[in-house]
Image (cartoon, rainbow, N blue to C red; front, side, top):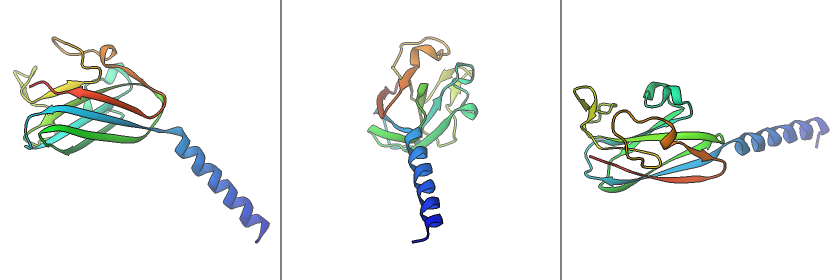
Length: 141
């Protein structure tokens, strides 16, 4: 085999090993889903200043709702500090519906399941990702 071809093949292998070693999996078990209507949406945040602003999330994922438990999983999450917001988008409009612009009318939950009144801050929901991580979020309706 051509030595140059071997050299470039080794470089490609090293790059792909490095790329896959950078990220880990994050699994979110969502508990307490009341119905199969709509979707379960989850947003992953790394910055307290953008927390709860879905357009500024690190990543957003959704899957069809199913009563009971729903599992969402991200791959290639870089190690660091994160918080997750999950909600049951029952009408599938891509946003958490609110009464008077403040009070959620669809089920929602936060990582670490903190008790909150008012807009939740980042810190009580923050957790570390350093290897494959699994968290549980309870929905509140």
